[in-house]
Image (cartoon, rainbow, N blue to C red; front, top):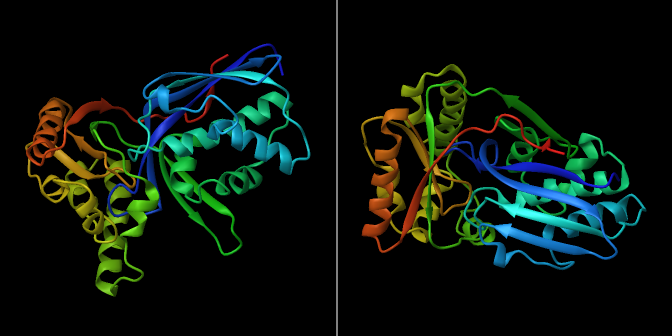
Length: 301
C-alpha cells in the first residue's frame, strides 16, 4: 500500500417500513478510516461512542480484513488504523454494515487486491447476511437488494428525488439486531404479505418520483414493526403520528432509532414531536437532520 490511505463509508437506514430486508437508504453519517504502515497493529478510535470500539484484533473492521486475507491466502501486514465514527452503535443505523465494508476496503488497500462484487458480498455475508445495509454502505443512494437462489446478491441503486428532509431520532438505549429479530413470527398471513408488497413498491415510487404524499402509506408495515414495538417504548404512538409536513415514518433497521422524511420547513418540528413521545414513555432521545448519501464508499486520500 502507499504510505497513507483514507476513505469513508456511510450509515444507512434499512427497511423503510414495508421493505423488510429489501430496501435501504444511505445517510450522511460516516465511518472515516485512515490506514498507514506501522511496526505493529494499532487501532485508534475517535468520535461517537469511541470508547466502545475495540482497539485490538477483536475489532470488527480488523476481523473482516483478516478473514478476507485468510480466504485469499494472504497475510495482512501490520498497520495503524484510525477510525473516526459518526454512526451510533446498535441503534439501527447500519454501523455493523459500515464496519464490514470498511474491513473489506482495508484488505484491498493493504494488499492491493481488489475483490469483485460477488466475492465482496460472500465475504461480507460471513459477518452480516443482510444485503440492504451492506449495499447502501457500498454504493450509497436508495437501494433495492435481494439474494437469488444461487446466493448471489442482486442490487439496484436508485436515485431519490429532491424535496424531502430526513430525520433520525436516536433513543438513549441500544437494541441488538438479534434481539429485534427474535420477536418476529415464523410465518405471516397472505393479507399481511400483500399489504407489505404493495407498500414497499409504493415507497420506491414515492421516493424516486417525489410524490411524497404517497410515502406515509408506503412506509406502513405489518411484518416487523408491530412486533418490535414491545421492545421500544412509545414506538406504536410514534408510527401513528399525524403531523403537518410529515411524509413518512418508520423504524430504522432493527431500531430503536426512528427515521422520518418531512417537508424541509417542518423537519425540525417533526423531530421534536418524535422526541416528545419517547420522553413521555421514559426514554431520552435526540433528533438529528440527515441527508441521503449518494456516493457510498469513497476514497478521500
